[in-house]
Length: 127
Image 1 (spheres, one colour):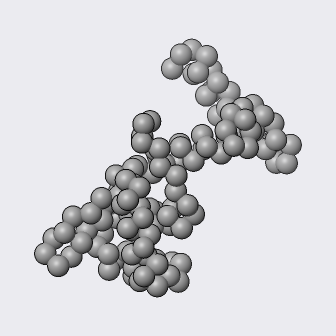
Image 2 (image 1 turned 30 degrees about the vertical axis):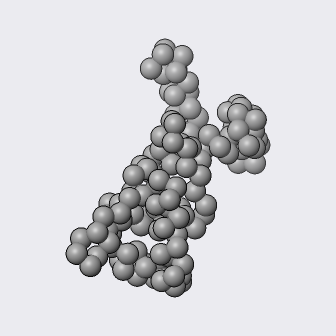
């Protein structure tokens, strides 16, 4: 996803979560899932599916009378991009500034501190 940056809205994230969960679903399955989860009508879901396809986040294939939708962007790639965008926008790209701000409001557990130390040690070693 390095060259193909896709910004997802909150509503689009909800649609993508359904696709990541099922890997491939019909338009009807998507509308049923999102009506149950979000209270959306059919038109809203189909508009979001079309928009995601235009953005290149999903693809569709017609199988008879059914249209199947599948994610092209992985959840991991989308989450990484969201994190990078957030970090750049809010903390000027500084991870240490973000961690400092977050730990002022909420103390880290011993396990979280150990995880951070382990990650830093791995990064220092070039892993």
